[in-house]
Amino acid sequence: MLVVIWLITLVSTYFFYTGQWSPLPLASAHGAAIDKQMALTMVLMGVVFLAAQLGLGLFVWKYRDRSGAPAATYSHGHIGLEWTWTALTAVLFVGLNLMGYNVWAANRIHGAGPNAMQVEVTAVQFTWYFRYPGPDGKFGRVDYQKSDASLGNEGALGLDDTDPASKDDIVAGVLMLPVNKEVDATLRAQDVIHNFNVPAMRVKQDAVPGLMVHTHFTPTQTGDFEVACAELCGLGHYKMRGTVRVVSEQEFNQWMAERQAEKQQQ
Ligand SMILES: [Cu+2]
Image (cartoon, rainbow, N blue to C red; front, side):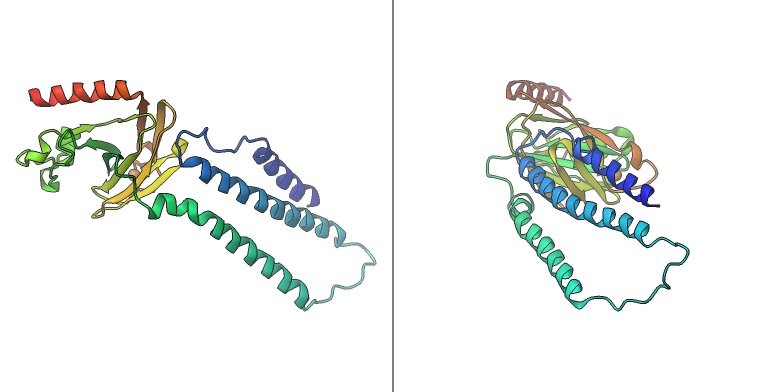
């Protein structure tokens, strides 16, 4: 028993220690603070975990059944010890909470900056649509009664083409973003609760039907990054993946100009 407990403890600690269970390489600006807070939590909790599990193994071994051992007696505990570890746990939890508050507030309580690029992210069983407001900076109206999944993109969102603001809206299946530019994403869901999770960017936010939920981040690396739905949303949840493609500003502007040209030809 001692061997099993220690083995599980030491092997799992080893994987964390060597970084094999670490998050993906960071690709966003705000993520550094999250990673720092996470690392601190893992180290503190790791020490507690190691001490508790190694101690458990030790006691299992020390008090194993032996012939001639004295009969077991019931212990009423030790008030001093109880107080000590309850207080230490409280200090640890409250302390980590206070330290993490600024990290949380920067992303969840304070909104995006005034120059952030507006993008709308719509989650629907089991895919993602990304909409850009176009040169007018305004998203056109969407009408769920007009939405038809078989049409894809604009049709799937139910974009109302009688609304002038919708004339220059671009809808894409891949989230194209320019590097080093803050993004203010408005999350929507058409059916059930989904979750817009970009692990490499440390972005994870629920998309809730009937709500416009904002989240903001700044990509710092170019390349393709996975979007995963992180809320169990039905049978196809496992394949509800998307892509964030981060490119140079110039490439982004060119892509956007091409989409606009296509749109205006329609
Ligand atoms: Cu989903």
